[in-house]
Amino acid sequence: MAQITIDIPDDLAKRLQQFQTQLPQVLELGLQELETQQRSANFLDEQDIILLLASQPTPEQILAIRSSPEFQARVSDLLAQSKTGVLSAKGEAELERYLTLEHLVRLAKTHALEQLQTS
Image 1: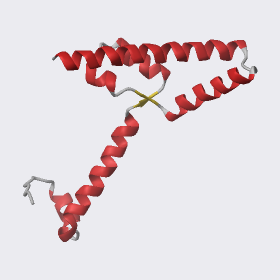
Image 2 (image 1 turned 90 degrees about the horizontal axis):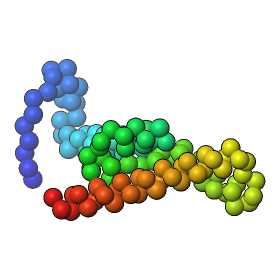
Image 3 (image 1 turned 45 degrees about the vertical axis):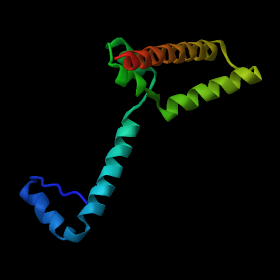
Image 4 (image 1 turned 120 degrees about the horizontal axis):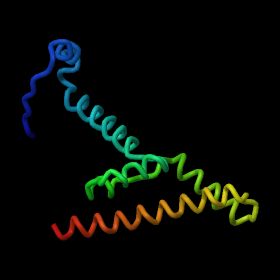
């Protein structure tokens, strides 16, 4: 077992005093919550993805790109409408834009992975 010493504010130390015997569990729960927040923060919508790609991101930032669940649901809905033949012209243009963006992200991820492997 490892030992870590940290400096924390007095008010936090007072709050943690009652959990002194459970500090490893407190830290584990806090880390799980932080990791969950970071994962959901990595989800992007169309505009966010475009802005990120235009900002000269690092290879790591490119590889971390994930579409938001809402964005994924919209693309799935448009694809379903397209398959059933009820997609409007406006919906078709939107779907084409999304598919183009997905293609660009895949190309960027391929390039980013190559960059990381050669460095």
